[in-house]
Length: 76
Image (cartoon, rainbow, N blue to C red):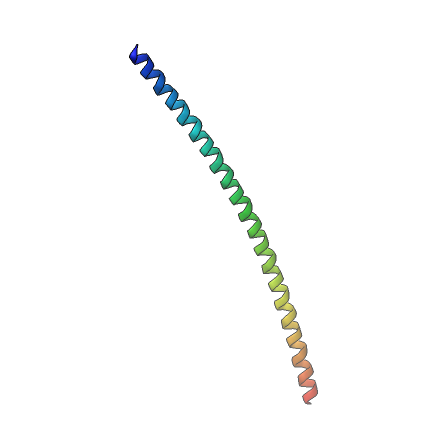
């Protein structure tokens, strides 16, 4: 009879470990999905900022060209 009790305790422990590991696994998947969502958001913001920087760069280049033309015209 002791072997049956011992086996039952082992099965119970295995079931408890399984439930605990399943919960941990679900939490880790949830954390990974949150991290991926945040990464996608940060990547989107990065692309938007790169576009903004490019727009500002083009605007500044255009203004510099206009100023150079104005200066050259004023100098003649």
